Amino acid sequence: MNKQQEAVRKLAEDTGTELRESYSGRFMYGKICMGVVCDKSDYEDVLDRAVKLGLKNHRTDNMGLRMIIYFPDVEGLEGREEDE
Image 1 (tube, rainbow, N blue to C red):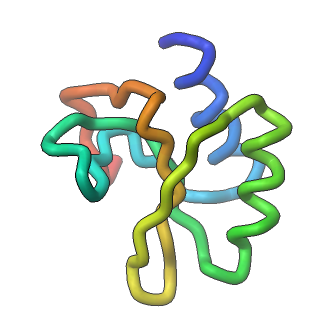
Image 2 (cartoon, rainbow, N blue to C red):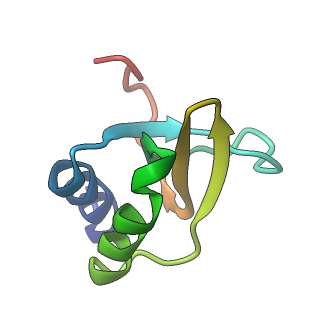
């Protein structure tokens, strides 16, 4: 696991969000990356923590009452189960 992947994992731990190790967002054409799922009300706090951890170039997708903040430049961990 590289430093950026470790930073996303730490972001999930620090913020109590759900870690996604293999997410393919809009316009990624099957490429996978890492991200975290949070309540919309927590978005700014989670993003602030991401910046402090050195994570950049985030994108978001709406998931109803929740949202995913994902990092296209952080390579996903293939072969991992999403719902572990």
